[in-house]
Length: 413
Image 1 (cartoon, rainbow, N blue to C red):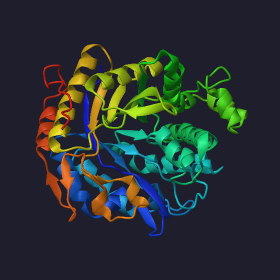
Image 2: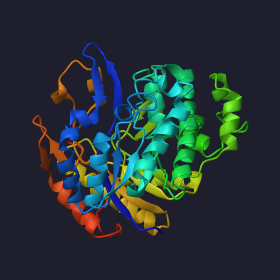
Image 3: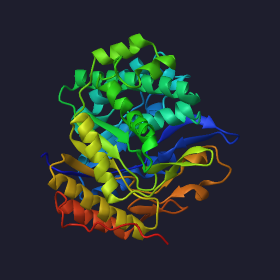
Image 4: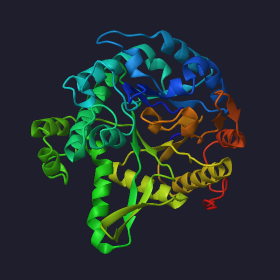
């Protein structure tokens, strides 16, 4: 099994289009003052002893106009990452697109433009990067942009979702090709969210299966598996997706090196149950066993090496510690059983601002999510928590061992 990779990450959602009456831009680096404190932030991360991190770049700022590039900030950041010995897994797209792509992911130019951006990034920073993520969480992206209409291009319903998702998949395929044209040995780390849905009711088995098919649809598109026999082919075509586009994706499967899995115990687990008004989705708090379940399912579906690319809990420090211990123990147990889990990422390493701030009525203080190893206050000070010491100790001990952490359950108050 490959050498184990301990990592962290900074929340890096970039939605550059102003929203609401206040015209707020959802740029997490701006909200936590990372554009100014980047050097000290990276020094804090290096103090953990990790040599890897997920790190996003703001495409909308780097590429402010077609064919125009501004490397003034990223040049300094990547140079410092190299100085402190961290090789980033670079998030090329973390939800947003440049302002000059008016239809965002459904713009006809999107796939070629995102590939152009990827090639420019790899040309400039390829030797310094430890990996490349073409786009973070395709299904979440399509949900917010295509189903719910919260982010550009503000489409709604299943037709909007499918149109955005296929545009995203096309962009990922072209991004991977562009990266490898510049750097043949580049490591591609796909990142997918978990949505573990179960039910105690046998009559809901088809609904449960459909939920899983939705989760892996982006992977199926990128890996060239969506042909006329795929269970969601008919739906995609009914949503207005050109069958020739699907055939083109099936004819050009991409190679992924590592499959990143994002699991948050407070949002990644649900149960379907029949109640008044029909079938309802009931959130449940995920346990360590659920994490093993999703890792096993993703590996069975793809055969790829796995990495936990995001996990944490939006909770007090004691409960965050419980989840760190439980999730690391789960990874150790999975590895002991032969599952190729090659890394673990606590994400985010700092507090961040809830996405609802973008259209919300309140100031930033009402939207803090304290999920990290450092908690931020309203003065944007980075306050180290005991969890940072625990994480540093785990990272220094090498690959997780079955006896290294107790599988504790969440305490409900």
